[in-house]
Length: 141
Image 1: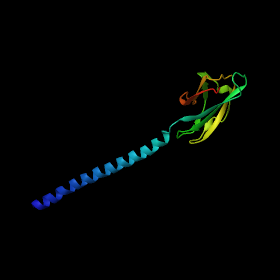
Image 2: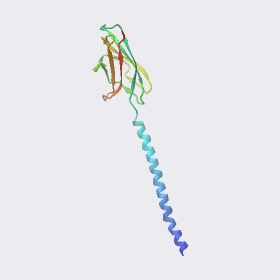
Image 3: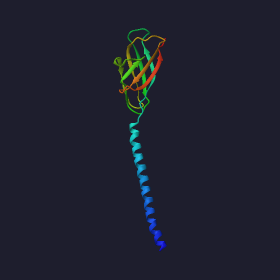
Image 4: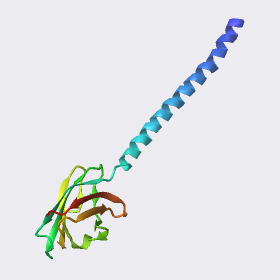
């Protein structure tokens, strides 16, 4: 009789172990699925200003500043604002303002009177007004 009673007790123990194993497996699968979903939403937004070039001669009224950039982030970026020394100059910029991940390009800030030896800081912002890139360069002499 004692042997039969111990066999009956084994069944609830096995059932409990199986339930725990299934619960753990399902929770791992759900966690992996949720992790895969969030990776797509969590891209980085970053433009690197690789060079700033000054065209024309110091003090001339119709000079341009050419800004060369690379999208160093993992999301496509669109530049919505361009600040030159703290002043928005987007309205006088020409060129490409949307960059795929890893893409390079440039845009031009037109009709700028730049002075030799003066520093010029370019800051780039996205449509949410978040800074996505910046650089400072001194005008050539």
